[in-house]
Image (tube, rainbow, N blue to C red; front, top):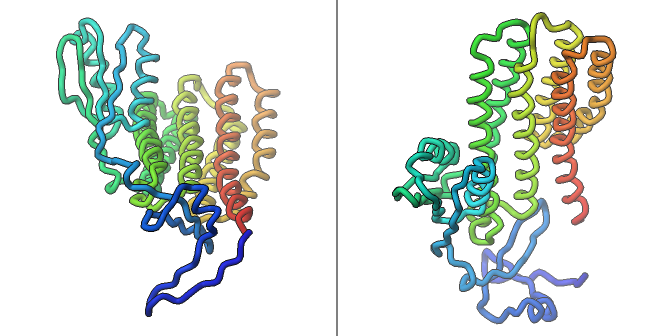
Length: 319
């Protein structure tokens, strides 16, 4: 640790000298740019050479379309999140599969088909990160998750008409927004884009992990009504209600940066597991799949709370 003294510079600025060893280690010289991140009461300084970063550079990737649709979907999402400007899809008789290809493209925000032939489809990334705020998108995801929870609640109370289809569409919307967040956060790792987004590295990893666990909650919700048949036992309904409150508190803790509430969520995990274990022991095996999805949700809610605690620990480690 090196001690430096703050020096006044003009009427409205201050300067501080940098250690010579650090400047030489990073290959810096007079006139080079630096990026300054504000983290709580601290400033983080890192090198920035505008000559090495070209935000207008065209990057592209080529993906082979095969009969393995899950593999193709995984490769396309990877290319999307990795922010390739152009994505080339090649293969034989692509016209026969254009419905599936376009359906997948439409599930990814700001991605459009710009060229199409029998053996090649070109997709272009039209995202403008200046128009995207990860926090706002995450709030939209949260509202969809709450709507899904209401659908599941209706399902276990016997109102099941159209629920499975509604949940499928909402989970698709969650995935679309989550992938958009991942895409933007990946861009934020570029120092210049990070400045535009107003995010430092800790912010990026915080939002990435939080989005990941929220998305997993949606995955579980979508599957529950598929295995709900007949009248649902009151003990299960009460356990589900407790789980919904667990999720709401976990998200509220993050949105309000309430560490005490996050700790309450983690402390409540055991009680909810006890409720679910009681149901597993007392109820028919038909409930096993249903209850296991609820157990997974309880774990993810705890992880959502832990994301906030880990962010707090990173901040305290810097002091």
